[in-house]
Image 1 (cartoon, rainbow, N blue to C red):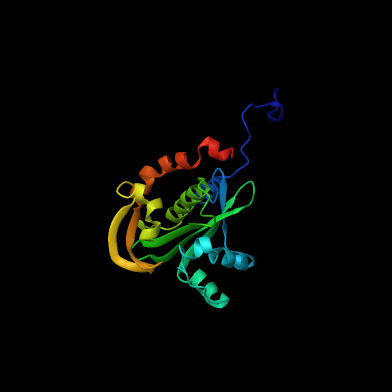
Image 2 (image 1 turned 120 degrees about the vertical axis):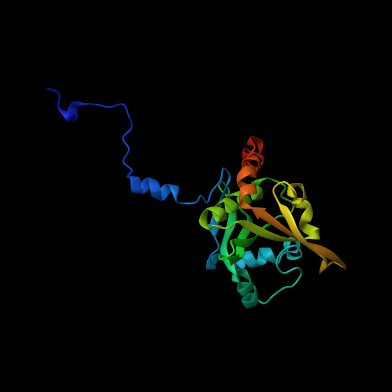
Length: 215
C-alpha cells in the first residue's frame, strides 16, 4: 500500500495562502527595472534642500529662483502633498530626482503631479522610468480620473512630444510666469487614466531599453 508520505510530486509546493496572493495583488509597485521609489524622510531634508536650491534646479522647480529659509522650505515641501518619493538608482543608490502628487480632489477625481531630476545634464531614461512607476502608483492607489501638470513654457520642451497623444492641453495661461527677464506661458496639461493605460507600455519600452540598463 502506498502511503501519502511516499508520493512525490514534481509540482512546486505553493506555501502562500489566498490571502497572501490577494495582498500581493493589492500592493502597488514602487520599483522598476532600474530605479526604485523611496518616501522622503526627515533624514533627507538637508540634502534635498541643497539639491533643490542648486543653480541647475533652482530656476526650474518650485522656488523659481527664490531661496526660502529652511523652515519655509520644509513647509513648502509638504504643502498639499498626497505622496512624495525620491527616484533612486537600484544599483548605485544615486538620487535621480523627486516625484510628488498634490492638491488632490477626491470628490471630483483629480490631482496634480510634478517631477524633477536633480542633474539636468543627465539625459538617460532613469527619470522617465521613475515617473512611470510613480504614475502607476498614483493611479493604482487612488481612483483619480486624471492627473494635472502645470508646466511653464521654459520646461515644456521635454513634454511636447506627448501633447495630443498622451497628454491633453486643457488650458494655457498666457504670459503668466516671469523668469529671466521675460514672461512665459503656463501650460495646464492633463493625463487621463484611459490615455495612460493605453500608452504606458510604449513609454516602458522607451525607458527600459537594454543599452540603458547596461549603462
